[in-house]
Length: 158
Ligand code: ADP
Image (cartoon, rainbow, N blue to C red):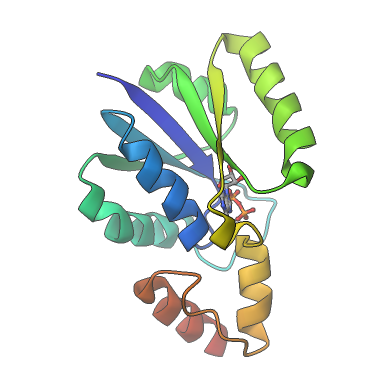
């Protein structure tokens, strides 16, 4: 069984994330989408809400499992028997940080990191920018799945 992990905060999942998850799902038997539990970072959606959204929008791929984790990603990989991490790269600005993380993770555990270049259609897209635009009433349809769009608008309306 060839298994890989796509980690992130996914607060909420965007079409940019989905593009990477979908393309990865065609290369591996199983993709574990790992949602980071970070109690220090304020989030718009709870971890369980994020997991539910991810499950709903990745269902059609057929080989995605959504889990949560806290602590070190490499420990999660070890527990789950996952030898590799896939990360999306949007721009050179992502690269510096991601390269260091990849090298550190390999040094700590031997877990490999593979980088997938983003679809240019989404290279400007991050969850934080998405929330900022939506908060000020900007149109974010087309950047997130319909379900997420609906939940985002409801949540921001409060
Ligand atoms: P963000 O809050 O920046 O959207 P996450 O922590 O949820 O990011 O990101 C999880 C992973 O998804 C990271 O590897 C990140 O580089 C990748 N990613 C996020 N947005 C995109 C995008 N638009 N295109 C490709 N990869 C992306």
